[in-house]
Picture 1 (cartoon, protein in one colour):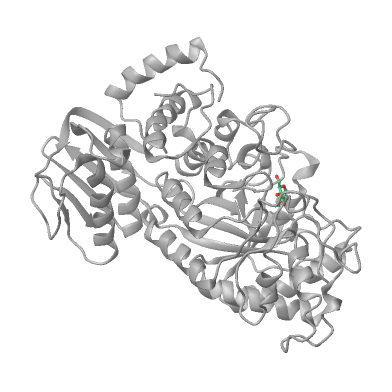
Picture 2 (picture 1 turned 60 degrees about the vertical axis):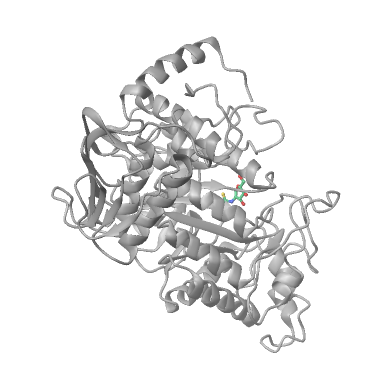
Length: 544
Ligand code: TNX
């Protein structure tokens, strides 16, 4: 960690003073008016909730969040409650448009009590995250701490800018346990991130059991980046039960899970697993015909090389394998989207026509399972036919009118929607600064660094000229895992940058400013620390 500079220390004193007076909420609410005085949570405070089901579950979660630090009982009571309670209810919020109702909420904190209203349980959950941040940072402590547990008097009407606010995690390059992923769900959802995109397969490993294709995990999960020469990176896989547990944990945090098995490239692990699967009754006995990689026969490659592997679009076996993958993952996943990958297949590996043929074969497998096709932006290229409303994830750093923005233009021309994840503003695997951190991160998109300023200072709605805000459904931070091995390394790359992206995705552009953001981000430092979340203490931020 870099030593704080004198300027940062000075900022930090100023930030601490502001923190005592101004609410430090991230993402910044769309509308917030701060009044005088404070509400105090005491050992008599109750949480009242009018409705049953999902709304009540949110109330129970709030109580559970606040109990460790306060030591209060905070009983959850049903019904209207008393004015001195923290009262949650599903109900109409005037001033929210139709689309804003999905996650909008209204929070009224008075000296005498707290009232949270939302049209949906998801909105209540978002409002609860705001309440947690309005409490002192020590609320994040996992052991009993002294209060007072006050919430400033505020009136908030809030809703997200974009419906899709994603965090992508690559569990293929290095395996991560379900527990690690569930911790990240807890941490991301606290900043109102609502989608977990799981990249479950890549050249180095296939990570989820697929019924009928035991080799995918028996063979395909054994390695990871660096396996040769680094015996501490053993690989691993999830059972379908593990996957369902993660989906359920995400659902409890109002996050939807989008699975991705990359195709037709980035799949050497699938090829290595199935190429020799001649006895599999689901295949035709000649599964070697799936291999269109540069190597024939294929061979393991545990480096970070990309672009050499591809499955053959002409092979029935290829389709059989993908049909099983798509149908089983779709059935277990909560998002309406299924991500079929589609990135980085150079014409020297598979001609563009064959690439497009592959995408055109796989897309119907996805729609047949009731899912909307999502893929990296290359899926919009010449020759592909995708249903309107399919989603292209734009990852190229090119912006404005640059010729490299072609994939975004092709996507819009085909009536696709866009998730913005330009590498220079949304790639969580890139180094913060040259050589920082020394042992983690890549730098291909960020030679001069990609710190929170880069992650904050861009507008997804105008990033590519000709792609309008109407075309964009959201943003996503992508945590590729060539260099990270465990939860704490992942957290160090993810935080604090994902918090900046969370605000890019939530807060109206006109209500965002970097200067206003920095002290609010700084206020998250003690919260992350108390929660045991490792993060990069960038010198750009006046940490509280
Ligand atoms: C490019 S971006 C990739 C990934 C790598 C990443 C590393 C994209 C769709 N593909 O395969 O992990 O760069 O930063």
